[in-house]
Image (tube, rainbow, N blue to C red):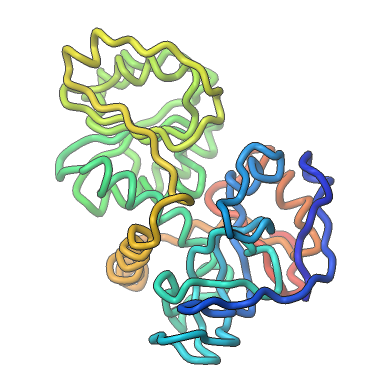
Length: 328
């Protein structure tokens, strides 16, 4: 089978498509013929050697897939030939991938392969951090940094569906318009407003902040938060070091929480997959949620797909197709 491999950590040019053996199944797993695989920031960080795969996971990049069940090991609600999609711990950039049966979700007939592959990582991350960790309540206001990313686009829509409001920081006017089309109330260009706490407070402050950036943004996040606010850090694109102002943390009873999805226990991921199946998919079918698919690249153009994401031009998700699809 084909798979994307790399001989050493580095830039996008270290990725190449090669032939390898298909993976072996363990009890409770599905072998899926991959039709499409999502591209995520985590893939880029892993490619650079800064985010190794968990023990026992495939070293091949790719955390979300959509495809057809080829083999079933153990008891499962799925059978050979079923169309499914779901979150994988690695191995998505390949013709075949192993998907845990508890994390597999039936693909709706009306949904394309690339649309299905764009959902698991973004929506499960948004649900986990906004609902389970962030405890977003109806009427609260969430600040979402990198609002036009795949996770950001999902988070904006989830906040709206839960009866909240969202503010966003983005990198361009086009991205701001995109976020507002999804339901964001207000936003700003981060290069124009690097010191943003006063602006956020003018708009009512932040009860919950979803931040994939970290770094020096921490102090402004703390200043922007309302009493009993929650800051959930999901990435470190802005650096790993920052001073934490403890005075407002104490005075405003703030919570600062780090969060990653990939190393969560299987039962947590299964619960998030169930939320995606029972809450998100019906909302998509009803037209309450937009599938934010930005671009599709063929597997052979994986280097270009990574370079495109690293250029920060995407509005929503980037997906690889295992069929001969040209970039859009």
